[in-house]
Each structure stands twice: as structure tokens, then as C-alpha cells.
Length: 96
Length: 288
Ligand SMILES: NC(=O)c1ccc[n+]([C@@H]2O[C@H](COP(=O)([O-])OP(=O)(O)OC[C@H]3O[C@@H](n4cnc5c(N)ncnc54)[C@H](O)[C@@H]3O)[C@@H](O)[C@H]2O)c1
Image 1: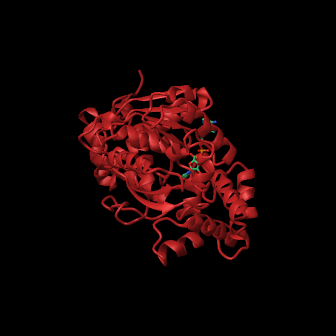
Image 2: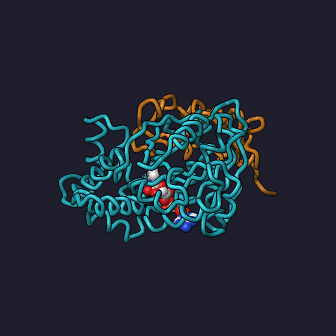
Image 3: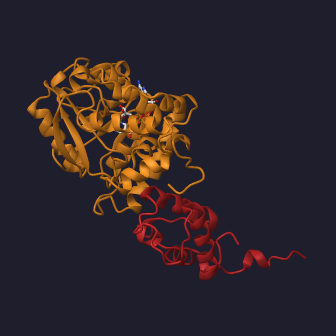
């Protein structure tokens, strides 16, 4: 029997948030908290916003389109985590 | 021409950094585009880039909500510009290449078709001499990224007609851009100021006066520049920057415009900036 628990573990806001703060801290080379607005603080340019879109789409197997493709969804790790959860069925990644 | 997007059909020749910027801007404003470049591979890459830039424009809230994005067609032949109401050339910053494209396109399109050069530095009147009807050519220096920056520099050549100026105003309004008009000169206003500044910034790094981050940090932090000169250079493309500096140096003799060795070395090493992933900065590792 194969253990599939890792594949079916539901995504939680906390887990996504902490993965994203880690990603941001590594990319921006500055400690980032879950509710820091990375665009307001001038830490990154608008080009980085698209890097975040691509990162979320590939990491969580999502398509971010239509009205969800707006900067407010990417300002903080918390907002991005909420977006990921909204776009994944029942909080489970689409490919699980 | 009017300011109704359905009255406009744009042809863009050259699908590099600026051709894809301008195409994304137009499509996002409901103006259909035919994009011409020299190989299928470049066209396929340009199509992908335009889709990416359209998403970026949407993400940043830079597209009018009330317009459906228009169609993009690609082509290897300038013959497909025949039906356009405006042709924008955005080919490499080499005077002979541009003259050839402008000469060819101006003989394909109907008289009265708006002809725009997006040249960074080549005087419009020099290019107008290659056109079938010199009065139909005007310079529009779109900024990079064209869909993010609403202001453009419009260059009226000595032979540019009033009708051409009216037509370009209509096009810019349709695209949600505002133009400031300047007279013809090498590099016009922006690049006669910006390019020697970037070159000097690169020379300061070359001479060990300060590293890249410090030069940019000072201009951003002390002078309030939104983006430092070296980060700007990486966005422009260092290959294009060297071509532009050569155009300026050849036409003005100003030694501040002779590309410095550090810039030439980066280009020789294939480090063109953002478009290759590395220039003054390494974009593969950092948030940018
Ligand atoms: N990069 C910038 O930030 C910037 C800003 C404003 C203006 N410009 C100007 O815009 C123009 C284009 O610059 P870029 O940065 O996009 O350069 P680029 O090198 O990225 O793209 C140039 C494109 O033109 C194509 N091309 C060359 N000869 C052609 C021909 N005969 N027919 C069709 N296509 C041809 C090339 O294949 C290439 O895809 C230049 O005049 C440049 O000075 C650049």
C-alpha cells in the first residue's frame, strides 16, 4: 500500500503563508512578515508582481485569471495565501 | 482616424522588447495588431511575451475595463502591413536597418497611413529621407514598459505634416497615452539626457568608485529616481543601449556618449540585462 497522506493533506492558510514568507524573505533578502505590504514599502518593483503570479501558479498548480489577477491579491503573504486557498478546491491542491 | 479603437489597425515591425510592449499596449486597448519580425522562432517568442505583458498590464490595473482585448496576428512579411492604419517600426537601433524597413513599409501602405518610428536616438528627419512620403513619419518614443508609463515623447521632424500630428494624437489618445512634443535632434530630450547618465554610471562602476547597488542606491535614495540608472539600463537592454550610445556619439561627437568598456564587456559576454537574465544585476536569483 502507498502512503498518500502527503498528497492529500489539505493546504492550510498557515502553511501557505509560511512558505510564502520564506520565499519572499529569500528573494527580497529582507525579513518579511505575513502582513507586510511588499509593494507599498518599495521593496520590489511591479515586475516582481508577475514573478509572484508565476510562482503561485507553478507551485500550487493554479490559473490566476480574470478578476483575481489584481495587485491587491499579491501585496502580502497573507493575501496570497488566501488567494491560493480560494483557487484550490476545498483547500486541496488541484493535482492532489 | 478617430479615437475609437475599432477605427485603428496597427502593424508593428520588430517584436523585441519594445515591439512586444507596444503590441501588448494596443491589444489591451482594443486595437488589433499585426506583428512582423524576421523568424518564426522570434515571432513565437514574441507572442508568448505579449501574453505575459498583457497579464502584467491587467495585474497592475493598466487596461481600460470597458474594452475587449483585440486580436494579434504575426507575420514574416512586411506585405502584411498593407491594411494597417498605423505602422510602428520598433526594429534594432541601427540606422540602415530602420531606413530599409521604413522605405519598404512606406511603399506598401496606402498614402495617408500614419508611420511611426520608435527610435531611441536616430533623428526623425534622417529616417524620413528613406520614406516614400517624408511628411507621414513622426517619432514616438514609447517608454519601457509602454503599457505602464502613460507619457511618451513625440518627435516632430522638420518635414512631419500637421495631418500626421493630428493622426498621432488620435492614436495616442486611443491608447491612453499622453505625448509631449519635442523638436528633432539625436536622442531627442530623454536620451540626450538619460543615455550619457547611464554610461557615466557604468564608468563609475568600472573605475571602482562605487559598486552597482551603491550607484543606483544614491540616485534612488538621494535624488528620488524611481529606478537607478543601471537597473534602468538592464531594463532597456544593454545591447540596445550600446547601439543607441553609438548613434549619439556618431552624431554629436560627445565623448560622454562613447560606450564605456564595462558596458561593452557585458554585451560581449552576452549579458544584455533582464532579457537574458543578467546584466548589471543577476535576475535569476533576485526579486526584481
Ligand atoms: N529597450 C528599450 O527600453 C527601448 C525604449 C524605447 C525605444 N527603444 C527603441 O525601440 C527599438 C527596438 O528596441 P528593442 O529594445 O525592442 O530591441 P530588440 O533587440 O529587443 O528588438 C528588435 C527586434 O527587431 C527585429 N528586427 C530587426 N530587423 C528587422 C527587420 N528588418 N524586420 C523585422 N524585424 C526586424 C529583431 O529581430 C528584434 O526582434 C529601437 O529603436 C530602440 O532604440 C527601446
